[in-house]
Length: 176
View 1 (cartoon, rainbow, N blue to C red):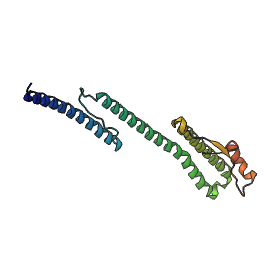
View 2 (tube, helix red, strand yellow):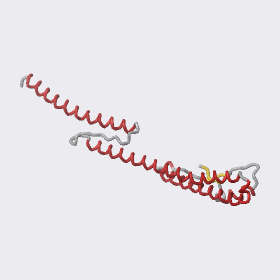
View 3 (cartoon, helix red, strand yellow):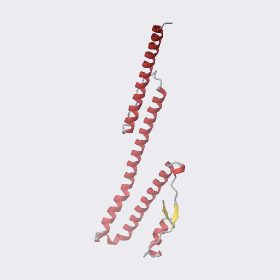
View 4 (cartoon, rainbow, N blue to C red):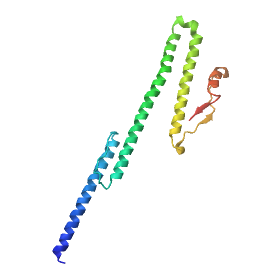
């Protein structure tokens, strides 16, 4: 074979290889742009490649991952909205009850108002405890929150003053 034939074959192989690499590079660039958009916060971004692309499986997995992340973020937003609404109700009642305590006309009902406030505080404590359990369940096992009982010195506080609070919190203070 002559040099011209070898050069023709080399040129043909080179052109074919260039075309294949160019198509692959285009698809990889689309995947990179998709990752950049997701990283920038555009959780609705999806990569588009040819159905015959060599990396079609990777792109499909990336698109499914992006959809799952978008779904999880939306659930987190919904949960945050629901939590803020649930916390707002007892806080509004507490605010109203504090205002009532400032008016002389409510002095005869002071005991009932204080009891209502304790109930609202208990409701808030229960919600916070539930949120902590939820947060603990979401963490990986190796990163779990460990709760431990600790003694907290309270200078100047007598056992009579602290007794109602201690009874409501199961005789211990939990610290993370």
